[in-house]
Image 1 (cartoon, one colour):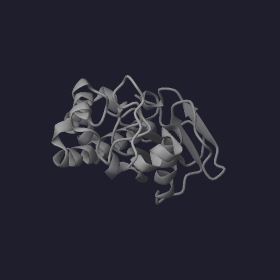
Image 2: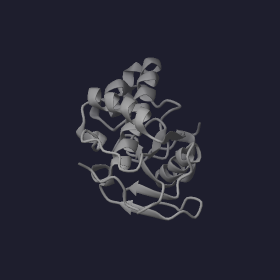
Image 3: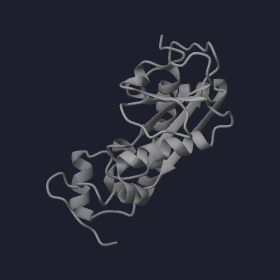
Length: 200
């Protein structure tokens, strides 16, 4: 069972992101506030769960959470401010949308930019340690997967419905063959060898 909270007696939001290492698509982040004393032995790091389990748990999280929200940062914004800052911005956008105001924030990873001067803790592999971060990882992952599958209908040759924008061999081969789309992150090394520059 993952831990219920990090801060004692504070309304705590857990945050995580999805899509940071992708070549295409927006980065998504989620923020989740769970009830005090909440327990769910099925919640875990989204990467350890099957797609079916993730989507089932998404429904549970949205039903049980005191508040939840998803924040999005576009490929254009990623290229402008870099992916690390974009990940933080996506988390801030998710926190902005919470219907319950958090008094503290816990984040998966080892870096974060302060949010409204609230106390925060960065926790390496936090999505496998704290329920709210695990819940955020599931929401960020499933909502981003939905988005990438919708983009795959428009650009089927990139295999996004399977790779979700990550740098697979098939994805990079499609870039070589068809070029890039408006959803590709132009600041990235898209072919995995030489840095490309694009002027649109």
